[in-house]
Image 1: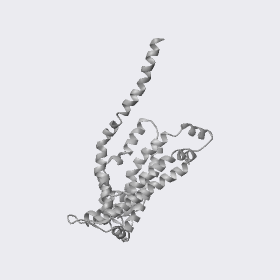
Image 2: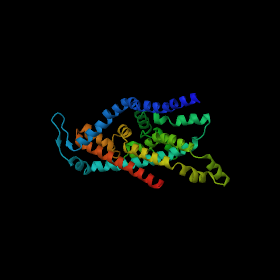
Image 3: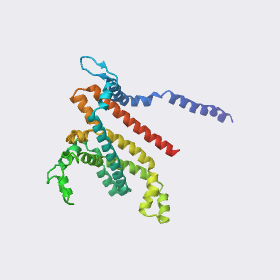
Image 4: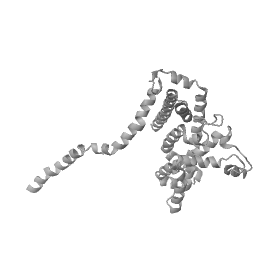
Length: 308
């Protein structure tokens, strides 16, 4: 009886010692995160704070900035070019968001499974995401060649349409850029949908099959309700991606023809770097950030209300 009595206090002291040891090493995770946090601070958060500061100033390099208050915001909000760019941004964001989600959901249903062939197909379908966006834009620019021997004109010629100007036609340029964004964004949405599909209870499908539910009804009453949180997350991600569209527009059309594809990001770039109106451009960037933040908060509030 003496030995167990002596061992019990030592055993009780070990968890407390380990807790104190872990508590004394709380800084270890932050040490590993420090390089990334420093990079984020220097290249993201500090520039964001500087943009907010410049948005209420007239920026004059080497001469000193002067305070103008809300004049930059009033100027850009009253600008016809900004309103047109904002409308194009909304149209492009809505089209790319719903297009990529619908196509990604369809692809996820087609390639769901565990066989090796499907793994290869999924990898091939995901390639547009990993290809550099500049390369993607250049490829689509070549395919959108406006002559009858262009690739896309040959494709639509098979069904008796065309030839079309695509990105060279003001009436079709914005839709053409949206198609490029959908083609690139759908595989990313597909992978997230696949992760969501893996979490749905297979017993629900079996029960629906026993009850005589068709494939469409199983998708409607089992798959879609099970993927509701995934849809909410993807909506936010795709909408933010659509609002921040820049590279494909800049490389394909640079806002043309006749401003038909000008979006907020390209307008901010031109104001700040081409026209040296950094204050007005910063005001536009702050407005874009505020719109994105409001959209994200509204979606999160709707999710919580439905969950409650």
